[in-house]
Length: 290
Image (cartoon, rainbow, N blue to C red):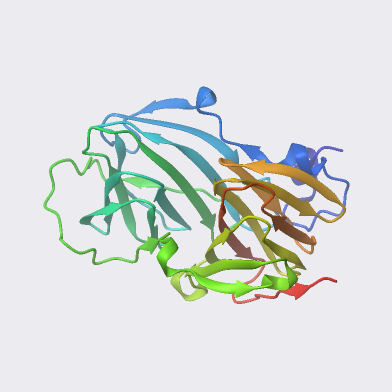
């Protein structure tokens, strides 16, 4: 039985059925497969994107993971959500982020979560295409909602400093973690966003850099699902008894209670962004597996 059919039949129940092999579950960023959308939420210009995960991928309330690019003069218009939280992330360049009608320029790699009941937008005023990601988590499984404000945010006044929550994926902020979760070598780690940032069961965003030969040890979460997005580098993902190669642009889903580990098998640093979503709010757990 396919995972999609199982999701339709069993809804949000934890799936105990056989899943596709790990290598097939890993989503791959592929610019040749980007959709081209115009005036998204009444925004300016174009947005290029593809869906990596959707609301049927996970047992928890992940709605989607989108990866794409914002061309010069493109963006997503001002809109708000009542039943979900969303975060725009840029990996390079800079863009103008709006939250609740206040706009500031953020330089990548960075992001800004939009909490439930708030409004947000993004606009690229530069002459360079910006690499972009969008993550959405709902208060209700599979429930997407949005109300447009008919506002592209082009030419609006800018605050010199953001007056909203931001996330920085700054390697200088990482701390050394020898044998992280029982792994090899010394990982560099930081929790970029804490559980209290979010109103939904979205629990955290972690930033990890693994030098050559280093790894995140085998561990599992009974109450949390994750996806690991590879920002840079190459390595190996291990989930339960399977392993698969990973590279920049890949997103690895980890479901409830799956034992998982990651290792840098290349000469370049392996950089990861980890998103954790709990089954119930504050239900965070991590158990090392020998």
